[in-house]
Length: 409
Image 1 (cartoon, helix red, strand yellow):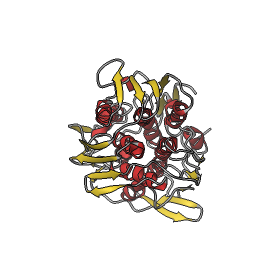
Image 2: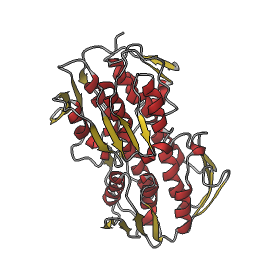
Image 3: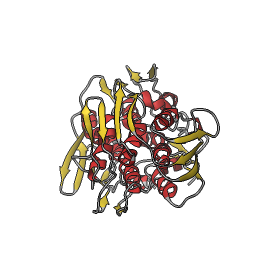
Image 4: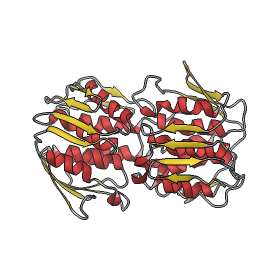
């Protein structure tokens, strides 16, 4: 694909879109399955780059494993390889080598892991010498990435003493922790909250004989919610099959967040059906600490609708594929919107005045969600172009093909 994609969308937005499988579920299932005495078959795994990297990392016994820009793979494999015999070096892209891993490494060392930094202290690459971990009691800060916590939890059943984990302070992205615990229980582990901030995982490993099928991705669905919110088509109708109402995915709250933005959700026999609804007025205020991956989608949607907003709980956005707070501020400026960044956790705009013409192509910073969140702006800004559109492969590789059905040829 070229390094610049210019978008011209048809006025009508009506059709059915088959979403990719959940990347969050797929990567957790791959990690848990690797801990099983006899792995089961996993069906409908995500085809996203992050999941492909995870699968490659789990194959064979290579001494050096490059996970490129896959943050989930870096965290989950760091923990998993600490329990596996042998020595491996885990490395990644230039950006990955700038993303901190020290909190997870310190925690694993307390549980008995042997690992060292190959380069700068606190950052990948890591040299991991695997073996049986003792486990036991551990306290970590609750506001760290939920992927660190999930990584520790998923290997806990194979540790000699299991794990009693205390999360100190306010818990970030709690739905992702709940997702991890639910999947662990599906595979026979004893794992549950004992108090508001404490989790117990018993030793004894995993047990499962039945295969598992992965559901569709609610994060991917959010971009179709955004397209419908920005579409000029009053009769717009998008059908999204295979999304579950009672989903383990925290981003299933997309349907709730977009209701005041004029998108109505109906669960039907053919799937989730999106139609135009009644939008509310006034400033939209949300705490997204449990759904940080929806931040870009919601910020860009509100900006393009001219809707004042204040979104908090965004601490983790600084250490994602890029500094997403700074990236949103910079790129929305090209669309006429000045967004304020307050500290490390808040994005606010009191009076968005979106332009009708994009002043420059949208930079994506090697971040899939920048491309995905800005693509729907083509409904509001003529001449909208996305740099390096291929970055969507990290989570939604079929996005441009799916969108092609709604583009002017």
